[in-house]
Length: 277
Ligand SMILES: *[C@@H]1O[C@H](CO)[C@@H](O)[C@H](O)[C@H]1NC(C)=O
Image (tube, rainbow, N blue to C red; front, side, top):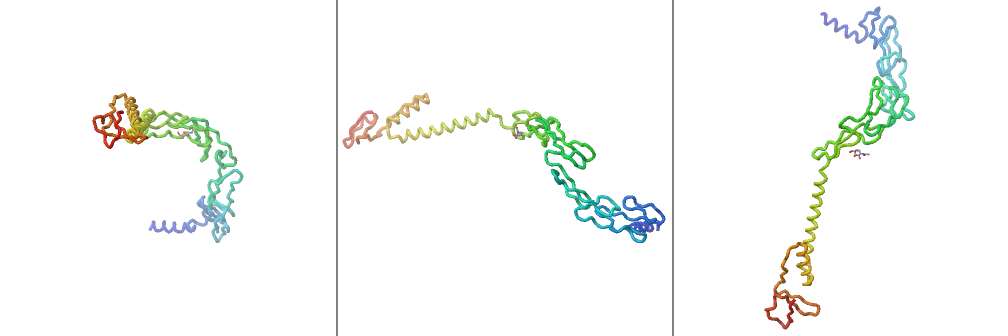
């Protein structure tokens, strides 16, 4: 029985009839006392269109666009959103329950919570980064602070915080970091240079071998061939016995066919003249 009565009371409370007319105990936030009764205030986002009377409760109306009301109220209008003019920029557009929030342009900051004036940020020198420090309730201003170990700032800036040193991962740390510079990552330079030089040397050697072997095998002039062979053998400091192939015939300019030394014991054919090279 008791619970049913409590429930009924709550239901009545919703319609603001629960409390005795003579009592002035109203909900401070959402009601006010008038005509020896509790009249409703208007909730955030609305204003009082018609005040409450002895017979009727308050008549509320939502805020028009461009206006707001952030609290329970008894006002007959909603406030205008502020405009972010001049150098101010909009940080957050206003709603029916909140005002517009303005901010200062990049590199500047508000001097107070209401952001009435913008002030230039301090420019932090190398090794220092921008940090935002509490300067009041829900109000921060930028300041310069020395980079902690593991962080760096290699630029002079009024915006940039200290940045974390790079993580070299699979690479090697070649140079330790500092407050003013990042760590240097990479593969050790000497070994990479040696590798590059080796590749270049091998490639040039291969190219030389290809070119020389071309001359040796396709050269039409015996003298040149031998010169090349001798040059190679001198180059390699190895004594290569240059053997002239047997029965190798070479046509000279005047149409005669020459044979090499190995052909001495062979008889001439078709009347060609034999010469010893
Ligand atoms: C700052 O450090 C970063 C990361 O190592 C590098 O890319 C950049 O070039 C540096 N800037 C200057 C101005 O030294």
